[in-house]
Length: 177
Image (cartoon, rainbow, N blue to C red):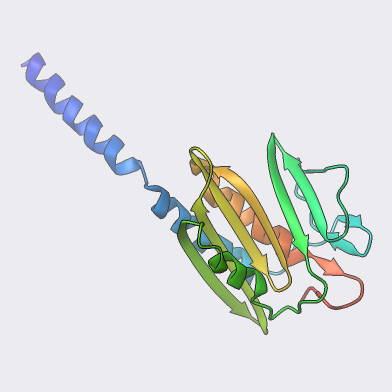
């Protein structure tokens, strides 16, 4: 009886574990969905500034030395995030999204696009180095990229969208809603 119970318990545990392990494509799709919700939300208040650019810097993120107003390198817990700001591109720009697909070497796992009040946004995941996933989130003339652990895709894409949505550039070319 005890042997049979162990066997049933073993199969049940194996089935539960198999059901809980999401594929990277599923994790990417979930992350993009969360990024879309962050895109729809009101932009976070800015709390950091470099030159003409101001943006929301989440708790725990540090601005790295050498950053400038168009290429801001952020770090948190050993992970690097690069925020690109193109002040010549308006909030409806699709440039960074189009560039994502222009690179034939990229193995794109999933992307999603969003529009709100004449603002274009997107989020995507591609095969990265090793077991990491390359993530990108963009809104108009700004984008942010990182390499992420598979288990952090959802959280990272949400945070990344919050950052790009918050960017203000004082010449008015890249404006927050």
